[in-house]
Image (cartoon, rainbow, N blue to C red; front, side, top):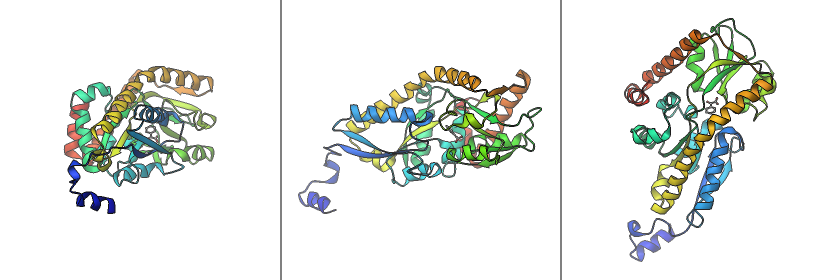
Length: 319
Ligand code: 173
C-alpha cells in the first residue's frame, strides 16, 4: 500500500504503471495426485511456462490433494487462494452446474476454439468462477464404470458405486446407489467393500494401485474427460500482454498434447487386460442403449439446473 501511495504521489497513475516489469510468480495447485495421469500434462505445462517465461512469469507448483482437497480447488481459484489450477469441472458443479455438461462436449479444442464453445465456457468461468478458462485437456479420453460384482445385465440394482457428478446420473438411472468420494478415497472404499465399483476414466487406475482391487471394466466407454486449467480472473487481468502470451501459448501447446492420448488409451486397455481386469460387454445393442441413456440423463440433469446456458451448451456440443 505504501508503495502504491508513493507511486501515486509521484504522479504515476495506476493505469500507466507497466503491469509488471519483473517476473510475476503464480501459485498453482492440481486436483489430482501429483505425478498421476491427470496431473502429468499440467506439470509439463508448468515446466514449459517456467522455461519459456524466464524473467516474465513463473509458476510456483504447490501440489495436489495433499495440499488442498480436490473439491475445494474451484473455490480456491475463484477466491484467489491460488492463481492457477488444474481441475475438472466435475469438482466445481456446486459453483457452476453447467460444468456437468463439459463431459458431453467431445470435439477437439481446436474446433471448440473456432466454433464459440471455448468462448461461451470462458464466459461461464468469468462469471461464476471469477476465472479465465485457459485450457481444456483430455477430450479424447473416455470414462468407464469399473466393477467387482458382475451384473446379469445393465441393471445396477443393489450395487453401490463410487461417483463424482460425472457418473451420478447414469448410475442412478441404472438403479445403482451412488456414493460420492474424492479419488483419494477410492482404494479404501473398494478394499473395505464400501462400494462394489467406481467411475473413472479408461486411464489412470494403476497410478493409485486400484488394479489390485478391481475385477471388471464395464463396456462401453462413455463421455469425454475434461480437466481444465483455470487462472483467477483478477490475476489474469493484472498480467502484462507478454505474461498472458506465455500462458496462452503454453495452453495451446498443452491442448496439443491430447494427440498423445490415443496411444495412452490403447496401452492402458492392454495393461488392464494383463492385470486380469476383464471387460463386461453385453453387446452392441445394449451398448447403444447405455450410451443414449448416459447422454440423455446427463443433459436432462444439466438442463434442470441451468435451462438457458445448458441449452446453449447442448447446441454447441451437437449431441
Ligand atoms: O472420477 C473422478 O474423480 C472424476 O470425476 C474425474 C474427472 C476427470 C478426470 C479424472 C477423474
